[in-house]
Length: 595
Image (cartoon, rainbow, N blue to C red):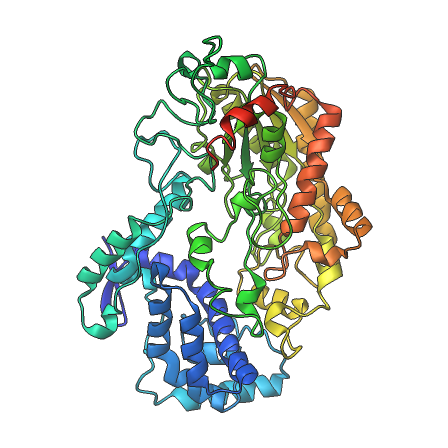
């Protein structure tokens, strides 16, 4: 394996690629962290050093987040303090401490406002301040936390989970998981106590084995396996012998009625047309969300960061609250409504039969990577309703020539046909596929550009226009086309989105398949806006405040309601019949084992 040198150590080439890939995200994170340190110092009238300590103490011990924070400040803290004391802004601070290899041709990406003269002056001043700092790590590129033995195993496990989009821990290999909860408390910081990296790696592994595998693509993403020791028991399968002796499909209904000896599964579910819900989607379908209190100095606290380990292990997604497979009451604002909950309410025999196979960055062109993680046996399992939800990434990218990177109508048709042919050959007969049209993202700039980003709330110094430009400069913008001050570009992006939606609609109307029926529905953006305004809200309140791009919890709940009613109105057969035995199921089986 090829190796290169970084910070005096040999690092495998694939590790350097990992670091390079995320280096620009590290730069953005640095600006956030340093800004928060500065704002905490201002808000609490404390020293910079005390604010660094306070910020780290807010972080949980789980996943060793507090330790990582402490070590970052151990390496860079003195230089950051020097720079902030000289009134250097966070973006210039992060450039000066050289967290990442910098392209001199690119210039400085900044989120704060500067004149050219002021920026040049601050850059020159910052370089002079840190040029002799002995504590500053000298390197051209950040080796990255994931190259350290201390957390390398954890990073590898997370990456493997992201690649396959299946549960990290699945003992019977049926693609469904059931693992209990809690991370063990972290042990003393080995990088300060002198313990070896190898000893620490063993501790990470030992602690992670007791982590809550509702995350890492566990039962937050697909129905909980009620017996992870038997690969013939999982949500969505047709029952074995009507589940007289065990719950083979994990819907919580099993045993026999003592009055007549008839199995409850047969009595309550036979002929009720059970079916599951599967989402093939993107980050909106997975429900990408960064809590704004993480970036707001006046709200930041240990309580605010309590859900950080959960969020990180779920890829910063919250599928348990999503439009499609949400099943828990929201803890991040708004409320939870989902197609799965509507489907379960309609027929309790559908309990736990959901799969969220969405992925951040999902598009028609890369959905084949997630298709393989779909778990459905054509002959053994019940039919499903598959929602194909790729509402933006076929027109959204971070390329400098964003239009050239957009999916063309011809490519869209090819991609859609590949997916539908795959589903037709892998799903049970009488399954349905709902193709959801793309969104129109022009409202993002129109309603947000003049408003203040959470990071700019304290001093009213960062608008979304500045935030969008900063992300674009770093080439990490989730959608250069819509998150742009260029109105022409925004219109071109929406025009392409409408063209791609038309392709999906045309395919649904002209192509027939043996095992699946395909339907097209426009993304319910207009219905959501109308309902929210009628409820007294404002349109900008439906957008995720931190990334300024994704639909938030309220928008997703309203979207689920709109989509359910739209499909019910046009194709009532898609979601099956209402089960007349729901009340009896509730009386006998309660919450059917919960989730």
